Length: 230
Image (cartoon, rainbow, N blue to C red):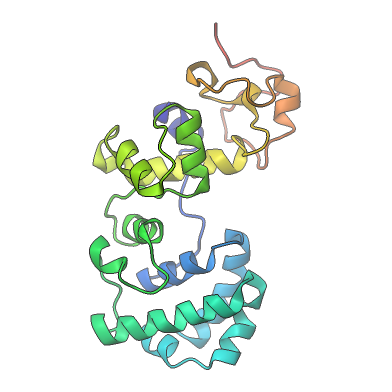
């Protein structure tokens, strides 16, 4: 199933724009309860005003709130970003630490955020258990766990460590584009033949194709092509 998804989304990647570990860390915190597209609209101005941890730590709260307002929950996010900057300055010389045990001690940073940063900014493999990953691994029958940390460990045991970051990317891409929470597009799914949850969504290929959120990757089955085998 992973190989098939990797073939479907060979370009899968972190959809948050960043140029440094700090930028990715802040962007990931801001992505809560909003879209990556919205975060990517906001962060260029944010990072232009506050280019490093020291600048974040010393930020004017009102000014930052105005910048972050489009992302929602902007007061709480402003507090998280400012206290994050302060913690980085006070404890890590203004640098983002490349270790999970250090990252999760920072304000607003849990294992999900830490694994995003480790995998994409430091090339240290990690499994990012967001809502998409959790939903898909349970639908696929890879685990029945619902706790994110337990899901992370259960899925990690199934795959070589080197694949963890890309595994997270392809699952997130598939969850956003095809295997939706309410009505998955089963009829055009590349892993339908192995999926124990096939039939939970629309199985008619034409109708399923209309559910897709983004254009399918090159080589995807045409709208009228049945992908499930007996």
